[in-house]
Amino acid sequence: MENLDALLLARIQFAFTISFHIVFPAITIGLAGYLAVLEACWLRTGREVFLDLYHFWSKIFAVNFGMGVVSGLVMAYQFGTNWSFFSDFAGGITGPLLAYEVLTAFFLEAGFLGVMLFGWKRVGPGLHFFATVMVALGTLVSATWILASNSWMQTPAGFEIIDGRVVPVDWLAVIFNPSFPYRLVHMVLAAFISTALLVAAAAAWHLLRGRDNAAIRTMLSMAMWMLLAAAPIQAVVGDFHGLNTLEHQPAKIAAMEGHWENEPGAGVPLILFGWPDMAREETRFAVEVPRLGSLILTHSWDGQFPGLKAYPPEDRPNATIVFWTFRVMVGLGMLMILLALWAWWARRGGALYRSRPLLRLALWMGPSGLVALLAGWFTTEVGRQPWVVYGLQRTADAVSPVGAGQLAVSLALFVIVYVAIFGAGVGYLLRLIGHGPVPHEGEHPLPGGPGQPRTPARPLSAADDETVFTATRS
Image (cartoon, rainbow, N blue to C red; front, side):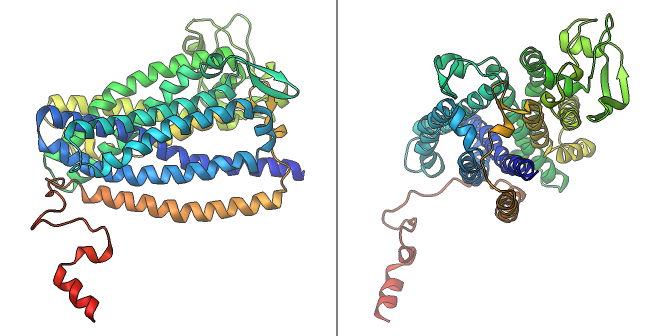
């Protein structure tokens, strides 16, 4: 019983830390791409509004980037402290993939981040734009390696098991495992959509308070164009991802659909709502649409797929959780498409910036992208259970021999510290967003030179010579 409690606490701790962490890289990916587009628009058109928005969102990007790095470092240590048997079993693959992420993406981002944030008056426009693009590329490279590692845990390929350890034999098969392309595109699109919704919410907040200017309008317009383009594509990618999951992880699909057994010769209904009861092996209070499950999941009117009863009870994921997290993700995705279509219709009628109901919906939908992202992540990870590496190593066999008491204390400390530190960080980000973009913020004279203000390199360098002389004599 104590081992079971330790396993549950280790899972909760990892879920807690990764739920905090995944939000920041998602915003980083989206904002990095947004900044690159803003600078490209400024270079092409010369309109100052794009430059103002760049300076505004680059400050938010910098704070968010820092919180993402800190939360990621903390999470990484848990592989050694809480999941040492997993590291021993699969470290030959997951270790190098995470190392490649550091050697490529992190170094690329770190190398150009300083130029991007502080190089406006020190390098030319072309080189600065190149730095911004490299940072944006670095975020995508980072997502590629992380998703390759996680996708391999979902659909392992390109390996052999030698002396009880996973050994890579084909790195291309390891990286481009069966679920990797779908999950990478799905995650990157989720990051862009989440960022677009946050930008739209920021613009809506200012417009609802009467702050109507070119920068705010540009924010809302660009965000809604992105949402209109990306949200429907995400639905199509999600469909392909579902087909791939049905092929390689059918038990997860059965849990997502709350489907327990086949009825020979009949199509599978789509259960809109219900309560999957793991003990009674049925979905209670089910509201069904006949045959729609077959049509969506197999693209056939009478297609079949295995129900949960086709698997031993110890091999079934928790359908109660997966069923509802999946519906949260899909429901919010449908609302996003609705918001994008409403904004497009309002734009045609010239009411995009004046429709208060639309602006209120955009404001309330601000965090919905991140909520949907977390719901999708829980669907993926809980749906993989009871396996940590699907079909190869069970989660119960991966946890470290750590006592439940130690895990409970560390979990409590994580909750306290995370809520305090990241709560303050998120509060600061909201304050920055509340201030809004400042016109001509980037117009500062070159540092140094006769009669020109300098950027202090030391505390006293901010004062004039007479003040320094007086202070040193006293």
